[in-house]
Image (cartoon, rainbow, N blue to C red):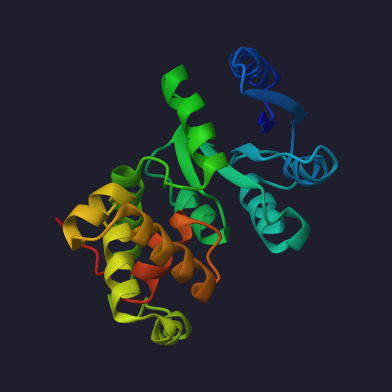
Length: 227
């Protein structure tokens, strides 16, 4: 199966570089280029994209707004958004994850990292750069007037729908652990872990593991550690 990739960045030179890289892979192809968020949303639907590489700062409709629009459109439920950012500690990245992005990647990443990120996002099996993403989320959720005041009561209530084991798995997912690592920690099979993860996503309305991490922190199930 060929992964259909959409490039959304207002810098034509950068889009061209990404296109050459992506099109050089036998299992993926660039199906469109957008210079702003509104065009990205339109092309994601028209070109049936699987993964959108989305820049945050674009004229007109920015990447954050576009990510929200994609996440809110039921016809684009299969689309995964990977945020491309120059600033790895940019709070817009966390907002994007909350809006429905599957993860983030620095624009200075190595070519192999970008290609791997596309495959991971398309597969929906793992959070991009789990340790880095988890740390970024924790850092920003730790900011505010008070740790408890920043929690989302509605999401905390939704956790009531989870079984004890699903909560345990969610804590491990928020820790950036893979299914195999979680299976070893909980002494169950990776398939069992995958089943629990899928059920948790369904019950919590999460698009993927990235959303589970955000929910785990926002609900207060996992508390960020401030160094």
